[in-house]
Image (tube, rainbow, N blue to C red; front, top):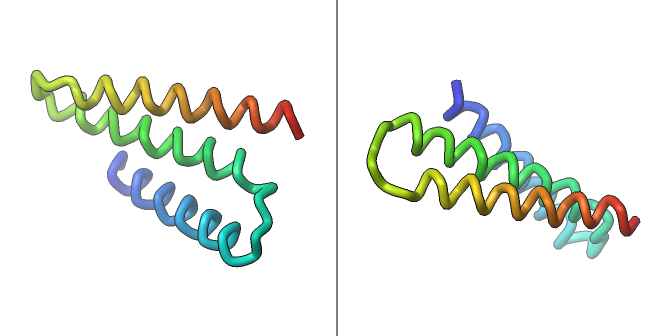
Length: 78
């Protein structure tokens, strides 16, 4: 279930960022930053669910919180 969500989010992020690059319209940046944060969060949850004793799952969760924070700042500035 989480792997399908990660693939779905990655496709949406790829399409939005490609559209933004092609059209030079950067008003969608907060949206795909938020979705990127959600995708990294799902990746971190998948890593933690694997029950490995490595720290990459926690690093992904911290990076996702930062991406969501940046996207919220982008929403507030617009």
